[in-house]
Length: 571
Image (cartoon, rainbow, N blue to C red; front, side, top):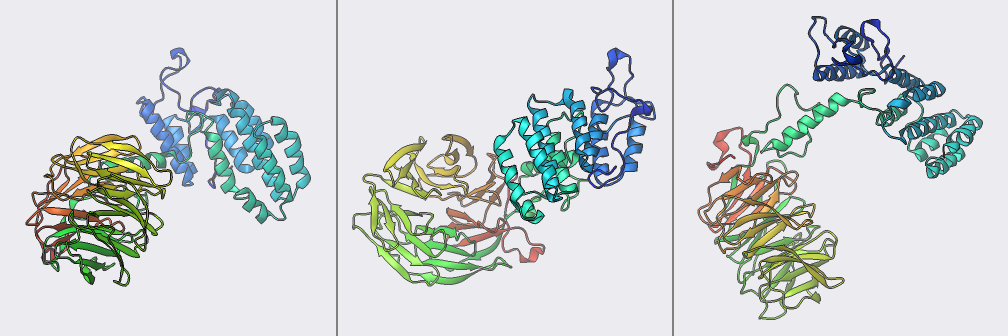
């Protein structure tokens, strides 16, 4: 009989012997009070439980490939059984749509069903499939009989029975498939039904579907998690990798090489930030200019798109709106102005200044791109619209850094009390989230909003869980005094962290490792800021007091194209 498109029966009894219902799929060495011998191969060597399990897994995989004769020979020679004989009959009858026989088999399997409610649930699933197939065949009276006399008396999942009764009104079998979200009568829907039914039976009776592939996929995922340099959006699968060797990403595939050095600023570069779509980079400098760079999507080289001038005290903080239409530029502590630029046209939308005594040193955008918050260490904390009008304010909060969460109403702010607090501008509530023992110079939040990466004065880089409010890890290597240094999350799944340092280096860590996987040299002075391209996992930028911005990427195939020699340190 055919199962999942493959012919031949799944069961192969040992040496032609019949077996009782409760006997496991591979007779073990200690059954029947020692009267039955251990399973052996044709060479007389006893099989361990692991060997028997492996044979069954291989047999299932071969059967799914349609190699049924090979499976029979494997089971015969090993003395194993692919699955329980009662389960084999059950599988065949389900795949053939012999629902009355399948119910008889279900009663036979009753002692092996794992949960008390399991048998009832399995019978419901069988009758549901039977009912739907009768509807597709146009046998409405027979379907109605199943609904009234078989499904309803079970008194199980009444809400689902009401839904099933509505399918009697379907005008065609296409309408039925759409409304029932069902594949229709045939191998596909019956195979999915078997997958559901198997969950109520122990693996010794019926193997979970595609069990070998599941185990292999788990092994691949584990290797990927342990790979320090894994940095790709493409998930590994059987089609794209070889199972003959472990998954390993080399350091050459990781952004450890200075692919481009931008020298257009004529003074210290204080900040850099990629746009959300990854096509542009904005850099702010002490030279009073903000430069927007265009990222070439093929070569990943950057060119100047436009320069925004007139930031009297310099540009020390930049914030792209979520839709990348606008760019906010803030100055250092002495600056009371904020510039809101149209990043698409280069026009100044508004220059905001509430008071000459203000200090607007940081900003963050609301997810709607229509509002933003800004503040500074002199006690200003405003929520504003695109015209610079103050919509709300919070008095007496000396802000060091800001971040808006995706809920559209919560703002995180680090302040001069060595903490990060959340502020809700709708109900005007605030609460403590993070408490450090030293000043929080800056922080950033992961894309899922769960983690925060802090640069803490004299301590370095700390990772916090915002939901559980616990410190997860302290990262080693970076030199952090009382200068403001901006770190970032990066990589395809925010698996990596990068930070500048006062020792002129860029440090990169895997999120799960306290030691850096790379220390990148090349800058001649303090590295103030690092920004990872959110759309290109193999690219990030670093800005330094040496007046340059470095674009980091993987090592090129031709070493003559490498612009700079980078020293790296592995964990």
